[in-house]
Amino acid sequence: MKALSIPDVLAEVAVLVRPHFGKGRPADYIPELADVPGGKFGMAVRTVAGEEHVIGDADEPFSAQSITKVFSLGLALNRMGDEVWTRVGKEPSGTPFNHLALLEAERGVPRNPFINAGALAVTDMLLDWTADPAALVRDFAGFLSDQALVIDEAVAASELAHAHQNRAIANLMRGHGTITHDPLDVVAAYCRQCALSMSCRQMSRAFLPLAAGGFSPVAQETIFPDRLTRRLNALLMTCGIYDSVGSFAYRVGLPAKSGVGGGIVAVVPGKAVVTVWSPELDRFGTSVVGTAALEAFAQLTSCSVL
Ligand code: DON
Image (cartoon, rainbow, N blue to C red; front, top):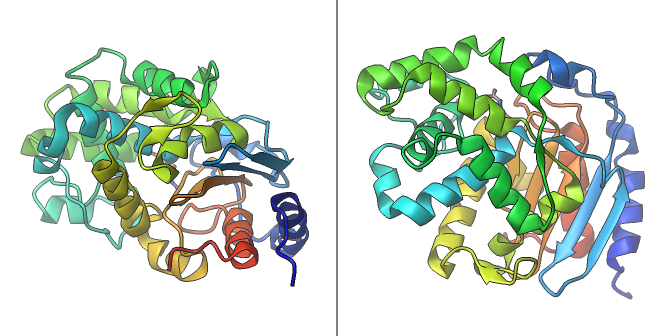
């Protein structure tokens, strides 16, 4: 049988995901995100070799949210190396991304850098370096995608006005010394970072170093050492989808990061990055249609790493 081309695969995926619309709900705990039309769907594939293929709403910016945690972690690891791991773990948490009880039981040390606690600790580390970590993340992602990116200040303000749980997490960590700056400053910087707007096409370009041994074919620069690239992918594989990471690995079999804006970025090591966006979420905060799309994509292309 002749292998399908990437455009053929994307067209087929768009058909296969149709029955999954209406099963989830856009995030409403950030009020500004509740109004994003649930029927949106975009997908962008960027290969290491330089091919780029998109379908649907792939050029419409969406709220990157937790996907930005990969950029902030990459920046912190590049600057601080293994010192990052003195304040954050690297184990899956088995609990929701905004969970508090486990953090208290484990004396304020977050299980991993992708749950909110871990990402807040990473933002705290970036505050040692810059007064504006969100701008640092925006400019890093912009450099990697070769585009000028913007933070959606309305989304940032909307989240900050409702960030009671994240403030509790930051306060708990301040009490334990995991973070060193004012918890309110850390949460404000984190909410602005999460409010970065990016399209699927931009996201696939920005994540390309994770598929290309640390080199960005877009920026024409080595971004991460190869060893760190492998480690970032290991963290995505084990912690990128929170407490449904096991079932995601079972269905898709690729390192990936989700965000409550409805985006999911998946890395096919050595080959490509695939980003999908569709705002309706499952109860774990992951795009329902996005997961189905990546599952179909991995099956049709046999690109799963597992
Ligand atoms: O802190 C929050 O709740 C959001 N800014 C980000 C959460 C998120 O994207 C979880 N991912 N699925």
